[in-house]
Image (cartoon, rainbow, N blue to C red):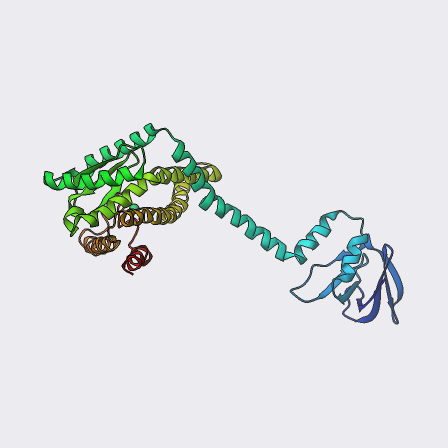
Length: 352
Ligand SMILES: [Zn+2]
């Protein structure tokens, strides 16, 4: 058994004695020129917690004496032969192996994160794709009914324009091969916007039609909206929201003012994140449609840029009052450089 050199202190004394410390079966033997020989049963020893990050360790004896030495080897050997409960051992392990604790904690946080950002969306997706069509119908009809009552007015577009755009829309719907009852509805509102409802209805405002320089610009947006419908984004969003809200409520116990506030926060963040993924998916759907039908991807870039400029203007005019009322093309998902970049790149590719 190895011998460790250290110092011995008598109880309540700071006088240092050089000693050799050695583990002999289940006894710790201390030998020193000035203190002689003495032994203690390891189960009677108190291993003191480590101080800071030094390698210095100390052990207290039943009579109050103390030894100091460097390194963990002796302590590990003592713990090996100690018959005391594992509790002390475990605490010691935790203390020396804090890295494992940190890793375990990180893994736990990672699992929770994965459940919220991957698990819930996956469940919502599966449910959304398997719900009966009636759910989509009800949700879509109800939403449009509410919007018509509150913020949408009948369209002022002439019949010829409406018919022309509906023809474009039906072509996109047909190519989607989705069995939903697609229809394009025009409404007047005081902003340029288009949005998709789960039942296959796409609503486009007069302002957006007027903002476009040609039909293909609107086609790119209609294809984007059809993408949202094909991928069931609306329903998935509602389901994800509900699931997160429900879980947070369960976790926090009950619904009080405080829990409503805290439960709306994760929902908000998750929603913002999912939305971006959904937007990208719908953007890709639109891009594929444009390419398949020999329409320059740049039409999406020009209309989105015009919309972004208009949106900034509107924000100054109306302040915040129109935010959050309606699933908007722009305000829910700002025009990021990445979003148009995909279309610009595709356009460059096709021009080669
Ligand atoms: Zn969108």
